[in-house]
Every structure is written in C-alpha cells, then in structure tokens.
Image (cartoon, rainbow, N blue to C red):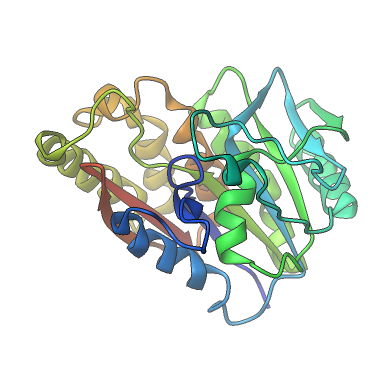
Length: 266
C-alpha cells in the first residue's frame, strides 16, 4: 500500500520525557504526544521503513545517513540528567538511504552520504513516541544549508517513488519556531500565521499549493514565526513527496503560547 508523507511537530528538546517515570512534566505537551503516538500506529499499513528529514541537520548538499544513528546526538541543553540517557535503538535503513540518494541525484541534485552521525533529537524524540518499540528501520536525510524552499519541495518530489515502495516519508520540525517569543501574548499572532500556513498547505491544487508554500515568507508574520526557517523546511520535503495527493491538517494544538500544526499528504 502506498504510504503517505507526514510533517510532524517534534516538540521542544526532550519535552515528552521530562518525567523520569515516562511522560511530559508539563501536561501542555500531552496532546502533541498523543498525536505522535497515533501518527504511525494508525496508518492503514505499517511502513517497512521511514525516511526522516529533521530540522536539526544541515549540510552543503542533501546528505543521506547510511548508519544506525548510534550513539544518539543529545543536541539539547539544560535538561534533566536522565534525558541524556534516553535510547531509541531502531535499525538503520541503508537500502532506503541508497535509493533516496539515487532518486535525488536522478532529479539533478548533488547528494552526499554519511555514516557516523548520531540521530539528533528531531529524530529520536518524536520517533520514541511514535515507534516506541524502535522496530521500523529508519534512514535520515539532511536539509541543504541554503534552505531554498522550492528546491526542497523538488527534492521531496524526487523522493515520492519511495512511498510506493512501503517507505513513510516524515518531515520533523515545528510549524512555529521562535524561541524568543512565548506565552499567551504570542498566541493571536501565532494563530494568524498558522491559519495562513494551513490554508496554503491544504490548497487543493497541488501546483498552487507548492507555489504558495515555497513563498512562505510572504504569509502574515512569517519571520516572526520563523526567524530562521530550518524547522519549516522539513515541511517542504514532505509536501513535495506528497505530489498530487490530497493534503490535510492532521494536528493542531498550542504549546508555550505557540499554535502548532502537523500535516498529512496522501
């Protein structure tokens, strides 16, 4: 069965695992955690592998990770000691990585390969919720440092055949990501941005959808929502991989004053 592509919010740091007994210390994260727990488990067919694009890995050229992501990269700071001992030991998917690289290069984009880097928290934090048994192989794909939205959509489009091969394509980021702005005074602005973004992402015309999302910085409050857009670019790849399939809002919630959304394509 053809897999969808998803854009998932990955939260903030190890937010879903702040309580050593298992659970977020702040219950505002619970709706997002519940969504992630069902995002993959409730798919019509279990994916044979996951190709994940995280907002926490950038390279000069798009790079595929061919290893198993161990040891994990705890790229967050100032959190409780136990959060630096979290584990998510899924196997790597070097065959998916190689196929992804071939598809990207076949579309005219240079691509690199990497083996040693640990999976960052944009991988293991949401996946530890979504796939707690760590029993689906995973390959990670980097962003390109220039963060060009149209090119990332095109790269996603090149990856679309993987969906017919049982691979779930996941963009892991945040639809709102401004760490300097938080609290209830942010919510009205974040809500206006989110409604505009969702309207663009769910445009029923796939060509117009891609054009509108590529022009994300023309949406209201764009640079307030993303002073730097690395957490939005995984959405571009997921959208491109969605091709001409339907696009839908899959999650909407509020955390630390931010209105945050997740999307599904196909």
